[in-house]
Length: 331
Image 1 (cartoon, rainbow, N blue to C red):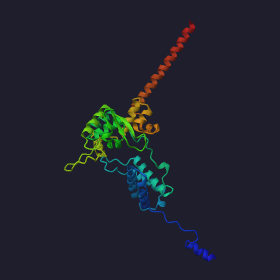
Image 2: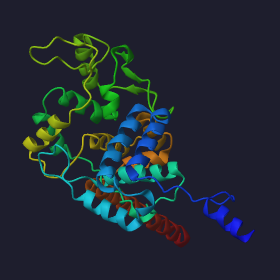
Image 3: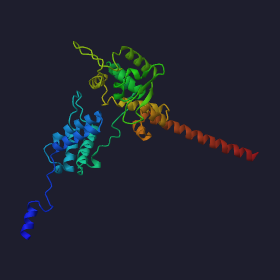
Image 4: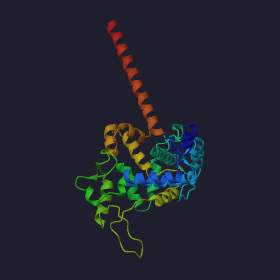
């Protein structure tokens, strides 16, 4: 009986069997992406696919149980020093990009129901990675910006729209009489909103709407020698943006999205309350809006001067009231 029991245990016939070996990371990625295609929007799927390609370069041949926190730490540091793809200025991958890749890595392990080797402390602090451009930089940048970049940048600077919202703007959603643009899409209900326009933005929309040959305000013209396709829209102005930054002599790296942060900061400095600003930006919470507002040094100095004036007025009023009380008591 003992021999029979040992034989059954060895051959896996006694309710105890060896677990199959964990999959290799490349196999795990394929399973995750197949699941992602049914669960995520196209933009999110594309982001995960891009991140998985990057992760596979580092971990593709390893089994998932062989990937340790130390390996992930080596990956994030190595990735941070890689040159940004198609960057003519030699800039490296941003911490925010590394964070998005680490987030995808964590999702891959969560999908496998295996503890992820990523740790909370591995994510870079993104506070301060964005910046507000100065008026001088704005004028120099717009002067060197070619079309349609100049119109796109002006739209973002004066309405706070996301770049993707500008690219996907349809002629039918532009109301020139009411001076508003309706944005019908977004991850949240707050993103779907009416956006008021300025006089300069109104001129851009009127001109581009009249020139549009299809549904898109920023439609993509055909290349020389090719037939026009009105249904194609502009999806990126990355090369034009980098070229304009270089020609303008702006040394500090900034993204097109930083123009949205510039709008939010200037709006707050102009006195727009945070609830209204959150609605304009399409944010669900005011906490998210606060991340977009970056007080400049000049604004801080002005705030300090206002506080100084306020305190001085308080002291003067107090001294005057005390003097008045003394005079009344002497009389």
